[in-house]
Image (cartoon, rainbow, N blue to C red; front, side):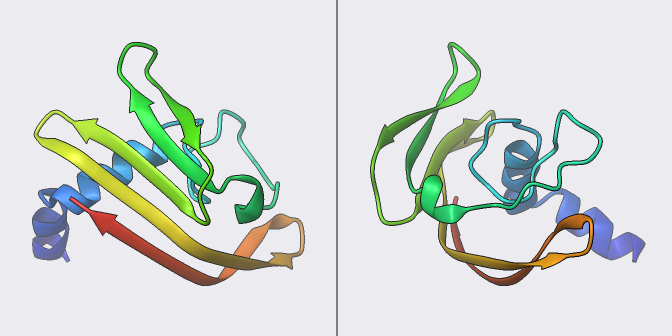
Length: 109
């Protein structure tokens, strides 16, 4: 376990996912919420489009409509990152956040 955690913590892919997770306005279903619990469903259709990270305001800006979620951002050691969510479906699960039943994502680093 320790070896796995050590290796994965150094991967660019994990750094990119950490960045997206920590941005309150990132258009992804798994992100840190400013609230302790966020049970709102992730509705992919309302978020489809291209998002680019603006370093001046430290936030994502919506650029244009697309048939999927297309996120572009930079990290200190990694330029021109792209994270795409092509399909996402979930089902309601009691009082918890919806449980993902289908996710099709592509990360380009």
